[in-house]
Length: 307
Ligand code: A3P
Image 1 (cartoon, rainbow, N blue to C red):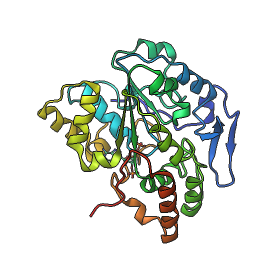
Image 2: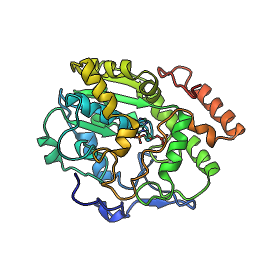
Image 3: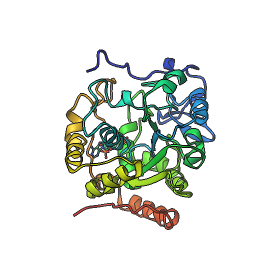
Image 4: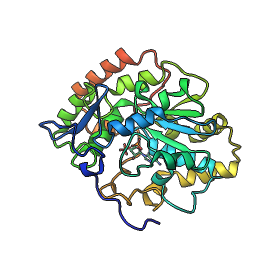
């Protein structure tokens, strides 16, 4: 399906090279935009363009803090708008528009303007930095997906460690945990991100959780289809379930992301509760304390473990 691999990230792919990129003593590489840590490939120019984009009524944008199930959601959305099957050409990533990123599939504004409806926009920005200013200021439909912070913290640790294109983090789990809870990871504080996105819920914003997709797949996909105004048959729902399953996505050339070097291990566990393999008792207590301080009034209902 893909002719050649997209090379692993290096700063040369940015319009301004390594300018503005910082490297901490634990190896973590990032740049700062609006006071938050961002991946090196989220450049000032790309970010500015992502803020200026004008959404159409037919556009669909999804956003999340990294490692919250956004790739899974993107597969479900693509299947929903495509009658339950994957498009014949390209790969999952190629069908998304990721305005804030200069890598791995940058699209010029002309290309974005000329893409067929419905366009699918991906973003990992906090609400203050959202695509086009966010749902309250834009046409189109927005979906925000969140996942419990313990599993996000662990999934992000594996994702960011020792890969040139990610954070290149090169230190211990304990050190990562401190980074995560103090908001010193790319995209900033998980708590600010999740609380910020549900502070105002206009009618063109749907809030979802990763856990809902895992535990209540049918209801959640029906909810997404209704929100998008897509007619969903039982047959389509079964096709979507099959084509978006963890095993199918991990194995399929369309979704496995092997077209990008070093992205082969993207599909790691796909479960609730893998935080238990990493968290110490005291880390768990500290995270629980933060959860009770920050999340007592949020709309999300997270599940942290299953039987
Ligand atoms: P784990 O690292 O816990 O396995 P994102 O796409 O936002 O980066 O999120 C990645 C997380 O979603 C990873 O979690 C990944 O395995 C999981 N994931 C991806 N596709 C999935 C699917 N079809 N079903 C369940 N989980 C999936």
